[in-house]
Length: 230
Image (cartoon, rainbow, N blue to C red; front, side):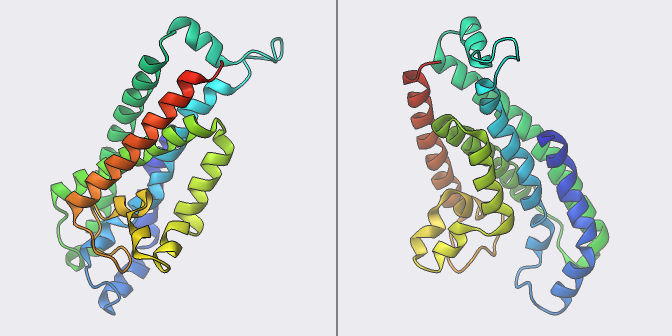
């Protein structure tokens, strides 16, 4: 589900919102029209978040009705007892899958946006497209790290989806303090979007901060995973 949602949601949104986006650009609501082609990628990010959660939460599900106390994690650890290596292997596999998913989705979404909006949006630069894909990978790893920490995929996924698609608590906090612009979901968007709230953060700086967030949370998640019983 996460793979399919990530692939189709953004292109569909680009097509469905083309009329409103065109009017917004023509009426001057976009100070930087180039962002209009990239904004639909935000909804496709849900696919990466689902993948990041499921890669961990599946380990804590029961293996079957005949053994309700057993979980998939016990079988996984029997095959790979070194927990640090297991965490790293899952992170690498997740990164590869989300990178491919993000690249395919970004190319399709940007091409469709260019087709339906025409000269209203400039041709997207490869650097910004690559930054958007990197943002997907980092957000997928963020979801992975949070699920490692909390060991509850439903709660983690619900919070992430609500924050991304319904009401962004991080964005609301930027109205209280500009420091909230450096929270991971907000700062990462600065990697490829020029209009993200009132605070301006350089793309390279945003990327470094995002990587630091993900690295710290992954380290914490791996440490907790290594200490907990199966």
